[in-house]
Length: 375
Image 1: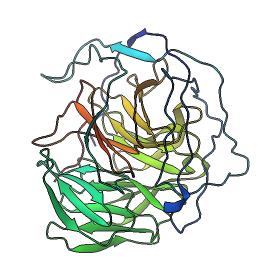
Image 2: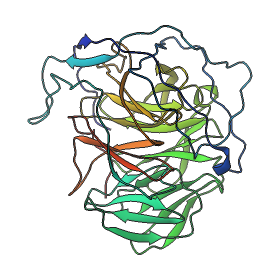
Image 3: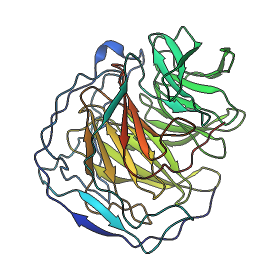
Image 4: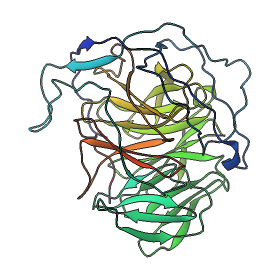
């Protein structure tokens, strides 16, 4: 794991925003067989629950998340405070020859619908060579930036996490069967792990380790090169754990509580073991936060699958939230996950978002993504 990055001095410019948008609950027609739990927030020593929206959100029909039930004693706290979102940030320098973190372009941004028909694309994954893994019906497909499409493998009624391993296989998390599988370039499917409780979010770090959330198991787990599973964290703070991403520079693992609309951080050591307990980064009241992704400046983006929205949290050097989460975009159809473009034909300074209805969006945000594991 890379050493901790130097702390950035953050300054911000704020603009006023309007009322919050609507949100819907997950479609229970595409649920896993496993019993799941509704994440509800527990009291954390670092909380931010301001309502950060601009304009009025369109209510979208959402799909792809398991049904949820309340955990006793973990009732979510919803704030009625409305605050302005962070719209820009400055630092005391830049990181790398081409990376400028002095000014982060403020939102909102206008999404561009670039393709449709990829129904079942709860997640998406770039191979770094020009291919993007999506799903069309029960078939996993690879799509180029020119929207040329190749079938990879069929027979997948439901897939949540979809990411490429550094060894080249496409990893898929199957919530109904509780399996993690790999699809080779020739379409061969192999089992990597079983007995998972509604596996959901996937993240592959640059070292090749695989991080996975168990939505129904209230767990975040890690797999090594031999796909030996290690539980990183288990407990109420991981209830309905969904999106997951590792920040190597700050030695932090981020994950979401879908039901509570909350982003948490957990310190990890160089071996990927947890150090202490998770703490809250921010909460978006009334949201259903799904996928997570980091940019090169260490800021975090969270997809509100319940409201078809995207939020960004500007973070300081210790991953503390600066200001309030910013509403970056609202989408005409459901979105669940986002990834920065990687490879020929894809814009590295744009986020690409997908959801179960099958629409693929591009959202130019003017900054590239943090390094991820790629083949």
